[in-house]
Image (tube, rainbow, N blue to C red; front, side):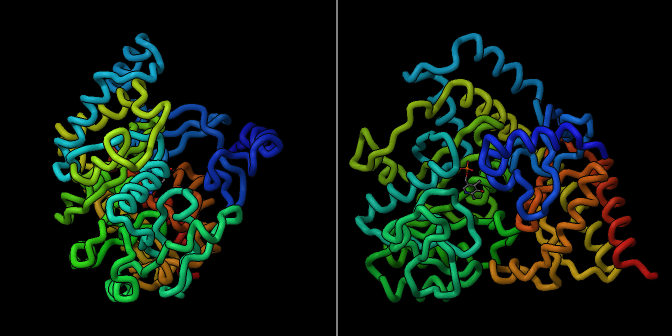
Length: 432
Ligand SMILES: *Cc1c(COP(=O)(O)O)cnc(C)c1O
């Protein structure tokens, strides 16, 4: 596979941008090699600057659930473009977007649009603290909630200790109130609440953890969080930046039938434009400025182009439940195909997944939390990743990313990917 132009661009980029990228994972940090520079995308395919074609299993990290450039979204955005890029003044689009989301997810009674998932989480945490008058927050090891200071906590095994910043430049004070618990372990959450019964503002969780590979909540885990939060008058926040509008039209809230107090969105909600949102119960959301005392603002929030793209995609999802059957069916086929290969060649791997989210872990452990996810052999993953990439399968360049399938994918792509995986594992683990 020719990668000359990507190599040249990468060289130029590294002089100009840290790591040559605007977000770290794109730099192939954990797998090495040359990141591909993408020129164009259509439906389930990516086309790079050297003319190579890939089946896209990243989908812009989630937003492109319908595949790239659905005609009706592009048409609507083109029409909106004619009317201007931004006004900084209220629009009908924002009202329509808020109506659509609150209809699709009834527990979201009020919503505020922002520009990224990071902003959504940062703001929701501020609201939870403002509403409860408490400072401490609980997050789970291995869950990613964007790069706001308070969320960048190295979640060691010291569950009872205050969070230690995971990034330089984050003052200890910013993470001193961030407590971490173990995913799928209600006892670890109970322990924190017993220690600080009146100090915890909220528990924030990815209802399906999709930033440490894919870790599915065990039966009763989310229900247990709901119970504990209610008992201690803390808020439960679902970070649905990945699961929202993906597990089903009403996200994890509907899928697991657990009602959080606040929900954060991103990725899919913008249809590929930079959008995030947070919302929830009215009495809580009324805390937000200008109604209430929790300040939060955004010059470009609710941007008309972004609202237009996001709203058309969401509206399609609302009216086309067959999308979820299709992406679920293909992902199930992908998972069962991988499982057959693993069994056939006795590969030390485990497949996790739910709906359209899949992860092939290079460990035999049944992965239910961060420590188990970390047991994966990332060297083996790196080798597999590059083989698959060179054969036209673009996965997230890290063991700890989900494989995303879109509505534009068909069985043909899934079967090609499985046959490439079979070739790879036969060459490494096949009988000599
Ligand atoms: C991607 C992600 C974020 C951060 O969103 P950005 O738009 O990258 O700031 C937050 N939470 C979860 C669960 C995510 O997957």
